[in-house]
Amino acid sequence: MSDDEPRAPVPERPLLHGVRVWLRPLEARDMPAYVAGINDTQVGGRAGYRMPMSLEQATAWHGRTLEQSMSGEGFFFAVCELGDDRFIGTTWLKEVNRLDGNAELAIYMDRDHIGSGWGTDAQHALLAFGFGTLGLERIWLTVHDDNARAIRSYEKVGFQREGVMRRSVRVDGELTDSVLMSILRDEWRSSEKPSG
Image (cartoon, rainbow, N blue to C red):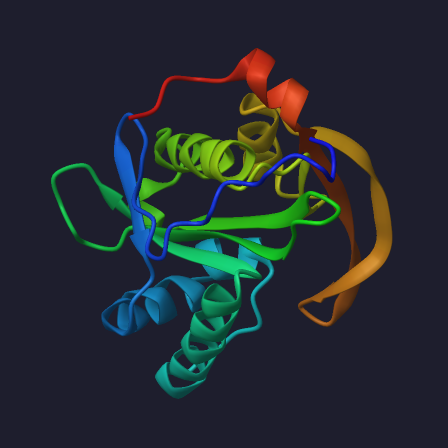
């Protein structure tokens, strides 16, 4: 997309649909479930969150996400099963730079929804929003180098490894490497899955 092409306006409260999940704006009522996931070492620990997190910290973080959402610099969603409004995970695009056409993606699913395609479906819906609605050119993420399940999930939706960020994050007191991954709009188009 050139700088001269008009960009689509961003919906105030977008609702995104996948095949098995839908994404709605993250709300204050989701914070207890969010905290439970973050404080689960198999969920939050693998996703790189600082634990433990208190409900007060999560509520403050949610306030900051609302500010980013209002400014268009971030879009934060609760992941829900189709036909249900219950929080099963969260995903977002942050550091949205519409001039350069890029944003950072993050996702985590609760323990009961890991490894069965829920997160992959949520990523497809979020990528469709980022590349379609927002008109982005590149979406990127970082992931712990030892989180093989997450890396496979990202590769399944089309992310490619760009490099390793050596000793970039502290886990259990030790500095570890992160993998930098990205997907471009053309790559997404060629691997796009149907979403509602």
